[in-house]
Image 1 (cartoon, rainbow, N blue to C red):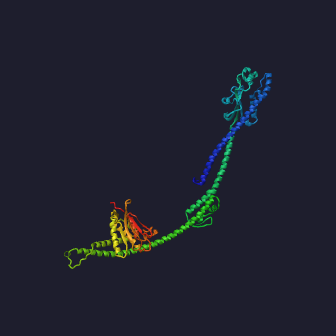
Image 2: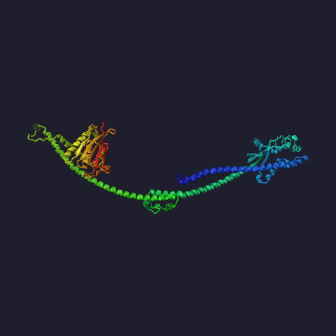
Image 3: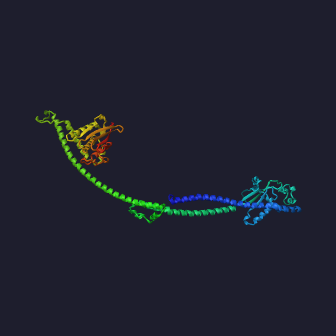
Length: 589
């Protein structure tokens, strides 16, 4: 039996109620039966005491006047006229009438008795102080318990007071007492009494052991009856609890455990709904019978049955959604693999062709630089014929072409690793970079490029204007940061109509020790739903004027800025242009 079970808890609660209630009931009943037994003993003692007092009064008022006249004439003494003797004689005859009265005792205990058989013992003598307050009310009694011959008795005591002066004739001065009395009892006892004095106590002893034993027997009978009734009630309540609560809960609990271990798809509900799956065998007659009941377990069973139906339907919907999503993911993976394969092939092809072109240009430029350097040496020192023609080329322009070719080769090498995120985690080559110098060179190159075409694009470099040239240096890879600016400017030119205005700006954030760089255009902007994933791989701002491309530029920008420990984003609204921004850490060394 587990302590956590509902049946065990309820049984313990009933046992506790029985223990407390039974203890209180038995204690109360015991006190009531003891009080009732004591009342019975008292009533019997009062009856005996009242009867003996009646015998005394009758003897004193009726018998004594009749017999006393003859006794005086004959000069004799008759004991029967004495109330004490008459009461004791009647009581002795009274006990013989019923065997149950043999243990009853009656005594007129006196400290100075005429008859020594009435001499009070120490216990009875100790009652005198308790009886003195009752002198004016002799009908009042004193009661209690005492042991006599190893038997418990209930005693009821009443004072005997000398109220009649005629009593002093026999019990006053021995010289005044009748001679027959002196001859019968002597002149030493029973004399010296005074008027209104307690001379004896009427005591009735009633055996209490038998009566209290009968009370205990009655208590035991009631206790056994109580135990029997509680046992039957305990069994009945537990049976009802098992049938109406515990058994239905066990059925629902067992079904729930089985459901948790299998699919509920395909089960047949008690209400006629059809479910599917491995738990079809879980619906048995017991659970079906519970749903018919109108009480709380029946309501719970119906709710459980409906939950089983809903659970089956949801599992079926979930399985269908999982299958559809799985198919969608497989298709997306196939499309992604196809696009990656095509991109890889395209990248390799473009890299091969561009490298060849760039290497050719670089070779030609290196030859021109070499010949330009030779032309500055006198002919006699060079050992060359005088008719050799010298080539005059601007060395600064040629150096710019060489630098561009070198950078183009570096970018083409990085293009092979664009599909791998590991390249952005490799060590950069950070160095202090001046943003005004970098953007000035960049804007000059783009202005020269646009001047040679029919595009009416205008550029504004705010970084070198309005004192922005005082910006601190940033710790960055100059080649990669230039690449970010170029991608953002190319996007502004590619996805906007002719005549767009592109502005470069930078602001200092001293609290974060960063510089916020921005490329702003006044073009057609980007839809808000497209700007969320704009920096993801293969993502492009889908606009009417979108050119061809694989969506790599902004993804590369994000990886470069992230590798520098910065952030990148876009602020845009359709028809109001776009501002692409990124942050770079300040060089504090």
